[in-house]
Image (cartoon, rainbow, N blue to C red; front, side, top):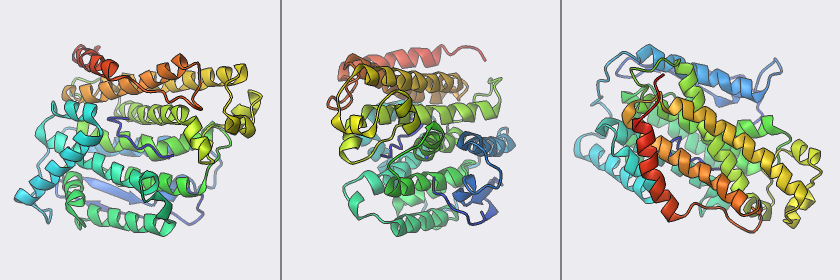
Length: 374
């Protein structure tokens, strides 16, 4: 069950091959590291996945810090340019508007360059997610994901395949966006093809990073960090990661019944056992006191990730805060809906009503405008 909604809207393949990489500089002199994402897992020293993911956070933050004070000079050398490139971005905006209406409205407050770049990232994430969760998911093979990764490599070196790729290729030439989070998201799709159980939260955390936390790391360079921010760049990236993890945990808790009917359980098995629950209990779909107590703990953890994320949202460029806050508030309310359903996420789908969504928009705007001082 992937859910790669942008940091904006709301994770491993166990390889032993040596990681390899290369570096290239785009037209603005951004040095972008291109690494095989299996290096996250292939390590000689036993560590938690959370520690390994944090190394990615540090790497992305370092890349941003190197160009933090540089003015952005927009590139005109991408193969598709002029009206064709403008049309590509507009089409990305149309896709974003269709599938992420609330977030799309928020992006309209951004500068045109940032707005278009975020649309391009959104579309790539959605297309990637659709490979394993879309209508043709049953036909997707590991080889298809390999081809998609090769296509990613090509667009990062200025060789886009279609108009959507061209928009993203233009984006990465204008912002210090690194390829690793994109590659890591593809790893999350590979996981969905072969893994349907998670022994503990550490394993689940890596999955959440792959399919959703990566989106935050992709987005921060485009959204920008406020010039008035006193926070470290690393902490802002960590908050972006936290929001992606929170969103994915919310997806998981909302979709327990749906996933179970597909033979999948995205819950830490050791924590289920500690709560006196088994896989059979999940497949039976009966709400018991044990289940309620288990769910209370899972929801509490998701909310902790939202709290961590919110601190970083206020460090973003002011024009970028509203869409992120609105999406965070809306997704967080899904947890409230699960509680209102008496923790029955087997047969009842938790959702946020249209009225609540509309109320959340001005609330998020006011909160973003009255951001606390760093």
